[in-house]
Length: 257
Ligand SMILES: Nc1ncnc2c1ncn2[C@@H]1O[C@H](COP(=O)(O)OP(=O)(O)OP(=O)(O)O)[C@@H](O)[C@H]1O
Ligand SMILES: [Mg+2]
Image (cartoon, rainbow, N blue to C red; front, side):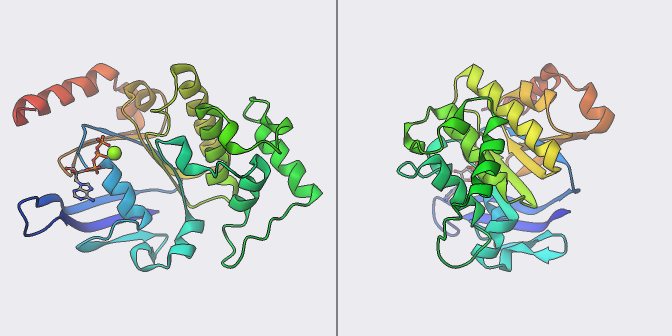
């Protein structure tokens, strides 16, 4: 269970660039939920993920995962609990390292000291089995540098890396946005499969309303640091892309955007 309670966040307080984003923001997510987060540019989606992962400090409030206050936890401990994949495939993998070394690194993130590459036979077979699931032929390219892969292949690898040591939470920030439509669909399918197979509680920010409709167990629409739609179960199942577009349009008329 993930709980954000009483979150306040203002950027550049007291300056002309002051931006009050979150005021008493609350959000509660049950174990196993797969939440699609949609909403206009600047509505606070990325900042919310940054607050959950601890990379952005809050002015007030708490982020609690399974009873543990995350925003006071040491980075290396939080890194085991939270897996992240970003929009840019470059951020999730190390280009000069081989696929094998990248996976080994992800495998070792639970350990605090040193990068002991667990390059043993059994592990290698396990990595191959994980890569086979992608259906991209990467299992035969363990010695290829990650930098030589296409964006879609690299993002698929980043996804495997973020979930290799099963995180309590998976945070995806427009992780298919930089990919061509076919690669985006493949990575989205893969995401769905991993999230379901491993039962990982996940938040996926996307501007692709089709993905928000077709995938996930809950959809949240954000606007100006608040939640304007929160649909799950039958309510989510009944919502169409048009329903979300209507709310987008109403909001932009109200705010003059
Ligand atoms: N480090 C920062 N310093 C100042 N303002 C910031 C900072 N990070 C975010 N903001 C502001 O907070 C608001 C929310 O930004 P955020 O990146 O969370 O939006 P978003 O919903 O992810 O948008 P997008 O869809 O464009 O990615 C914006 O007005 C942004 O300018
Ligand atoms: Mg963003």
